[in-house]
Length: 480
Image (tube, rainbow, N blue to C red):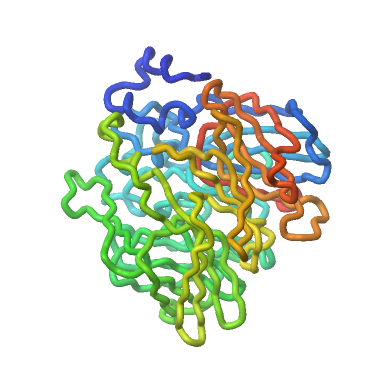
């Protein structure tokens, strides 16, 4: 495979314990070059009514790790494919965060999450990579980090980094990945949390990039949430029984603790005070990713992927990385919660028992009731491999399935509405897929209304797209 593991061992890039780290080898191996490729070769035909771009974020270490390395530590790299008039163009670029630049210069004062925390840093105790999430707001991309970091603005056409976003110097601290954009108002609604302190915050940024609302929510203790919900009128914050702790650790290194307490969802008006939050208790659980959230009468409805035990034991073949591999084997099922704002009742309904994650919807319908969502189908493997996609009917829990060819593994997809779309699923699902044996990558385009038929076009990418994290779609008219 290009930039193969054997070469990296031979040249000394991979040494010591990292010879056992699967998340810097195979489909996870970083790429060395930034690429621009125009007028790409296509198997099939790119639909003429597909206009916009699919972006996908992920970790790509700019230097070979010399110490223990978590998959989440890699420098952020965006991969993008732009479509217009039946043509496609591909680019990949590093997200040039402050810590990326310090890493390149050899002056970085923080390590990854398996390294001792640097509590003397002002806002983040670990290397801040912006490698997790990406969204479009005010005509530009914003890349976000999962432990709450500095949001980074990026040119949606060129992928060149513009710089840290502070909203005119008014951003109090950080922003977490999985903050949201309201497709109707253009507002960016975000949340933040502290690793060691008992609070969360939420805020709103206008379409003109002005911070117009910011509030703190007090918690019983520090928490480690991953996502939030957003409706037309409410923010839904997660108080889940998972915390980040230094208790019992050596050298202040990363540890997650599961506590014996119910999960709570806090519903608060989007422009409300922090003390106006209304808490709803439910069964103890953890949620990485929300599908969508909306309102029906007195109820706030949130659909999300609820974690379940993966059934694996740590595998000794991965040496010091056995626990990391075990935790990253995400097993989750789609679940609906209904929170009645009048009675205070919270009900829960599991929609299906298939294992899937990284859910996406048509972003034009975010904050509104959606019927359709698309989830990656997790391979029955300890490693996080995306073997296909499920298309869910969120009303019935029924799912259609599209699986990639053997040896092919995908990314989080994105939904691309066709030009002049007339319904929620009137469009395409776009996804990067890579062959683990050859390293060849392609972008597949699937007609959402003929989902199980597979791709109508397979766009050949003249570079490898490593496995990564989250993606998004931006319509052509949303990009500057």
